[in-house]
Amino acid sequence: MTKDQLLTRRRLLVAGAVAVGAAGTAGVFALGTGGETARSAGPAAGAAPHRVPQKPSTYRLRPVTGYGPPPTVQRRTPVRSKPLLKMSGRGRTMLLTFDDGPDPRYTPDILDTLREYDVRATFFVCGEQAEWNKGLLARMADEGHIVGNHTWTHPLLTRLSRSRIRSEIERTSDIIEDAYGEPPQWFRAPYGAWNRATFQICADLGMDSLAWTVDTLDWTTPGTRSIVRSVESGAGPGVVVLSHDAGGDRSQSVQALRTYLPQLLDSGYHLTVPRRRYA
Image (tube, rainbow, N blue to C red; front, top):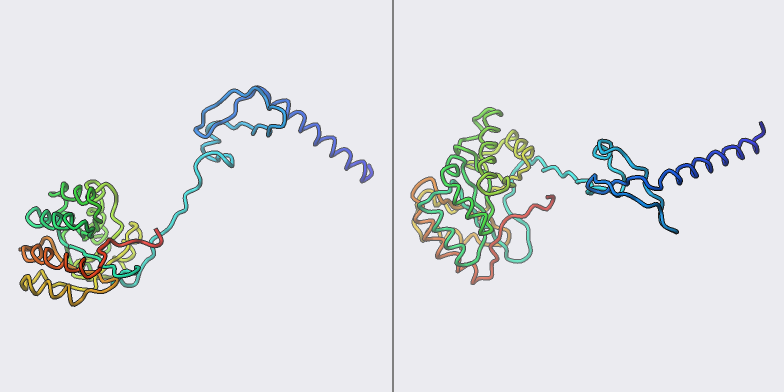
């Protein structure tokens, strides 16, 4: 058989297959996006030909192009070698953060002050505290605050095994998700003690690591005026302020917030919550 004869035979075979396929599509079921079927009366003049139907199981495993939701792009949290100390942002933006809570004696007062001035903050909570005060986490969610992970018992992570570190972090994330409504995206190591295992576990759990720029030292109960001076002297674009709403007598922290918060706002600072660029 010559080359021209072979080409002619192939054209005839292809034309026959197309004719059979067009005849077979009239009156068949076509799959919709939800896996349901719809009776077709055959293509109208000028309409695009029907897709060849697939069995439901095949459709679920291998959707036809154009059907079903778009593929999800997976973004992994990077493994850091050190935590973030400042946050980038436009203008005079600062972050207020509170560790070790929630505590029913002090956290509600802090939330009341933040609500009065319409300011959002970040609370790094301990799991054993959150377990007994889930209502406060729910309130934080309702009022637009960020809840971060601060481990379960506030241990020194650099002295724990990898499995213990993971347990401390995972248990707290579970409590936060249950009470706050979504898993935490931020983690802060107790005492600011970080190690490679902690960074890796946080990344595995989808959390980034945030430290601080200004430590108010309120945990030493230095006096309300001293806490206020620490915040005012350390204020600046991108600054992250560390305070506490639990772990001891935090009445000075509560009083100091009532003083320095309106002063920061009057100075033109925008108090906000951290944002993840890669999320």
